[in-house]
Image 1 (tube, rainbow, N blue to C red):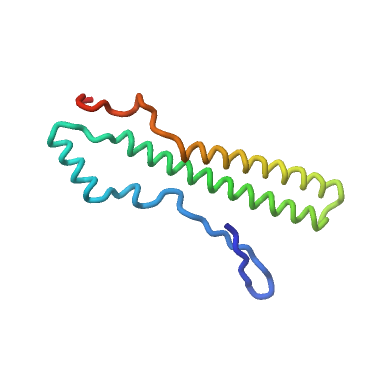
Image 2 (cartoon, rainbow, N blue to C red; image 1 turned 180 degrees about the horizontal axis):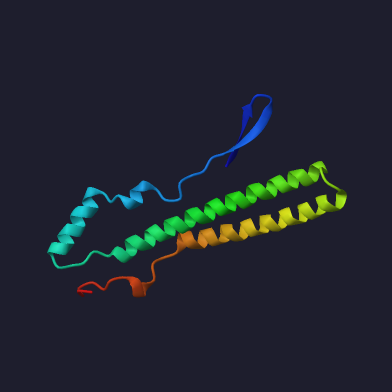
Length: 133
């Protein structure tokens, strides 16, 4: 998300980036730790596959979000330069075409981001209850 910032007499865009992975993912709560200890004492192994899946999914979603945002910002910049006719007419048309192509790529990434957000851990990866895997 770009916000204009006034510096002297020039307007400059300031880009605000969000962290891809939040600290809560890496630092489990006390109840999570207590549950894992109780499971270990009862002879059950905690399901770390789900934890790693959630970490990977969160990381991938953040990377896709950042990439999509960067592509959208670049496409917008290209369109603005083309509209200002800074370069020749043929080059401005080429910039406009490439900017539209980049917007389509950003839309594809948005679709992929939604798929990643809805993804579930594969059933073969989950631990079977009652088995000492």
